[in-house]
Image: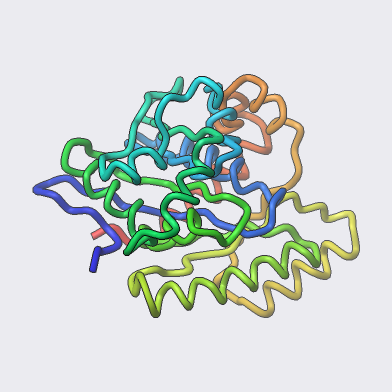
Length: 267
């Protein structure tokens, strides 16, 4: 069975998946900003866009319509993931395009279809060194998301303090247990964090309190609030952590990054 990490000679890729089956919860924004904040600390980080919509690719200044090769192409060919340097030092991207949806369809009938991404990461580790790999998943529990869960050691789950966001999180947690039992026993639900929080709403505060009481220490202390800086940064093709480093948006993700790095366990 493939392990959660990819150790070839002295090359090590520590892989973290960011997933949530509900869309609009800030998953891609979180992947971009966590990756950028880790890279700002001098670590080499690879962001892998596994969503056919290509939102992470677009947020980092690349046009998904011009992408020639995606993770899906590498998975189908049995090769290493394609990697591009971003405008941020130490931050790299495996881009996505609409064709990634075709890859999910083509992988469906194949034996071991849940582990094709893990194999492409293994091939990548043979030639390239990264300190962290962050996988951004589609807003679904389809085969691409399952591949991301099968390839990861740690799972981070963004959730909005709202009824539908909480429901999506609970469905994902159930899927994680199935993946752990049948595909990747090393997968760990490392933490849940709130996004798009608005402390002015009673319903939002109540939902956040209920989830914190339910999940306890699994919930990160840092809460990501809704900030316009993320919109401006996306238009510039950069994460807010880089485009607006003094903004509250960047400060929140800097704090969350520190919590994440304290929880993940690099050998």
